[in-house]
Image (cartoon, rainbow, N blue to C red; front, top):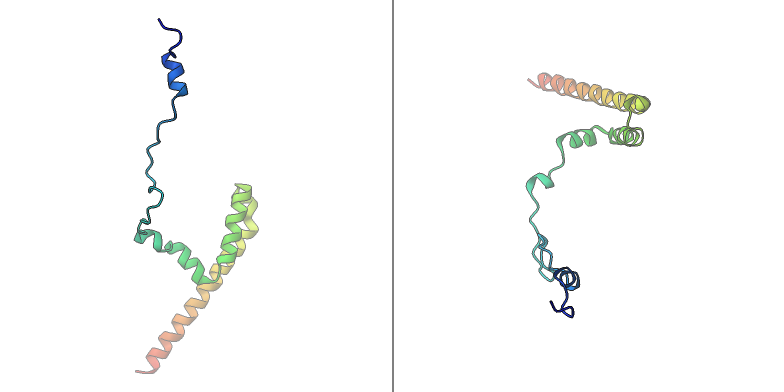
Length: 107
């Protein structure tokens, strides 16, 4: 055996790393992945909360839950969000009732 020649382990360690197979686009390529329709659309629940005007109190609940990991410690935030949503629902009911009355008055 020729000791001047590297062993298989030494040869492998000295070899440059093999190029990694990657699913990313090669550099210099300008192709972009089309955005899926699902990614464009906001979650329906998020849309509802945003339209309600209660997004800030919902965010406060999420922040508290992320910090404490215990809903019991977030009761003030949960109650504020619940109150906001209840107020929004009452306003919506009043608006629907008003529209219904206006519609029947025109007939």
